[in-house]
Image (tube, rainbow, N blue to C red; front, side):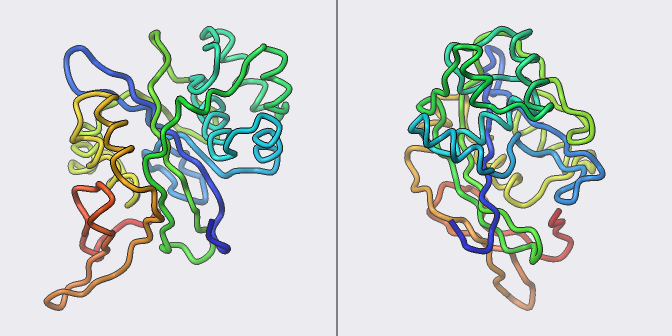
Amino acid sequence: MSDDAIPAATLIVVRDSASGPPELLMVERAAGMAFAAGALVFPGGRIDDADRALACALDVDANAVAAVRETIEETAIPVGLAPAPSEAAARELQSALIADEPFGGLLSAGSLSIDASSLTPFARWVPKFHAVRRFDTLFFVARCPAGKWRPQVVEGECAGAAWITAADVLERERRGEARLIFPTRRTLERLALHADFEAIRADALAHPIEPVTPWVEERHGEKFITIPADLGFPVTQERLNGLWRG
């Protein structure tokens, strides 16, 4: 990972719908957060030393450990756990994580394991928009466990959470009802191309996971934020003027 960027992981949780496009689990960051305050994002956060130690003990990727832990902590939806706990058990797990109980101990106590194979790498974003706080974030995609999971958010970190289609999020932003940072918008545009989880996963497997670091290009006197054209994203440029960077 980049020497000057904070390692992080994000989990795109997908729930198929019988009547339309798949729904995605998204959280609204609290207004007081230092980074991307008020933005709609996918659950996730930085990888800490405990994640690395647990990953080593379980012989899995630390990115996957962090993605699973953060999703449970932020929403109480236990993606990537085997066996999938009940809704009540998942909320108890969330409460324990909020109280800073070690994730590894909680997994052992509940006879749970991390099923890293259920998470598929989707993209890796390393923007340079922020000189002070930059992130090197691996995005995973995973299917939501069976059942009617209702997200429960953590007060102070998330202002809300909901299941919503990619197209609906993009439309909400267009109407000025939601805020999106650049990597989230590009990811939603890509997700909106697909009719179900399997199509999204196939898209992830069809493209290399290379660092996406946007750069500025000038054309006809106007500046554009640009990303590579061969990594699966249908929109690869956006005008720099007016771009919200979180």
